[in-house]
Length: 411
Figure: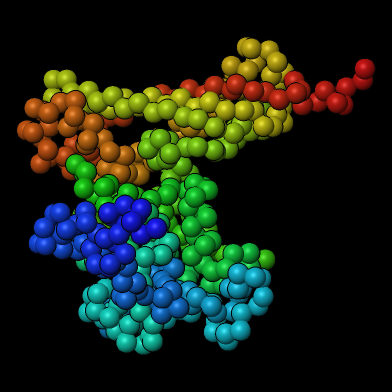
């Protein structure tokens, strides 16, 4: 039977390399064998891994001015496996650790404060899951340059983290305990995502401050007491110029700025009816803004054109909105509300001499020669810049009824 075996099988039965490798020669055969075995060297395991239970995950950070003038860093730290974080099977955790801790440290700058905070922790400090960064009002007025440099230079903080300026002490906000969400970071993140106020991320703020006017907008938030319980509310926005806070916008002015920045996604407009006998409300679902700069005979001017479309949600007047002429009167009335909001925002920005609308970029793009000559005088031109505002509202759906008093009429 052995005489019937092929030569290859007969050779293989003696052990060693197969004849195919012998024909290649000893050196080349060993090289090919080494290449075939090399993938095994890559299967060495995760020798340098970091377990999630070894991390102190920062979900929110507050930056304030300490009593001695240094930087105070307060962090909300999520502890994996702590109370409130159930196992995969739904069973309650066995650990007695609290799921969220608030810890603070003071240092010469933000990096020094973070390193001093690390000294208090047995787990590795981790910025990668930080949802919000909060600046206390005093710190914002003193300047945020050093803090922004650390947050943008360090590899861990996320560019999508939301930014806020807090009225008073920022540390008090992350120490606040919500009812619905797990911690303050989740509440602030969801408030930002709902876009009820001006929303800006770490990357967005950096881009704003890098533009021609070097100004930025950051939402302004405050803990307010309501029904014997405190809760955070966005009360407007603050202007950042030369990397420090130089003014505030109230809530109505902030909404005007949102129109100018094309940030309106879902907003409610309420106005008195043209006949003065009730209120009208609509939901704006879509908007467009067009900025047209004009430089003529040394006179600088900005034309602002706004268009908003949406649905009529409530008609408290006796106007029959099924009639096109009456509907046009309502649209005009609501457009005046938009114009007033935008106008008040522009006036406030010019008063504090902070071009948070981005007008400087428009002049630089459309009139590069004129801008090159006058860019050093923009702080003189902007406060007296003529701004013409035109607004148009289009109601695309009026609902199922015409006049509000139809149900009360005798048939």
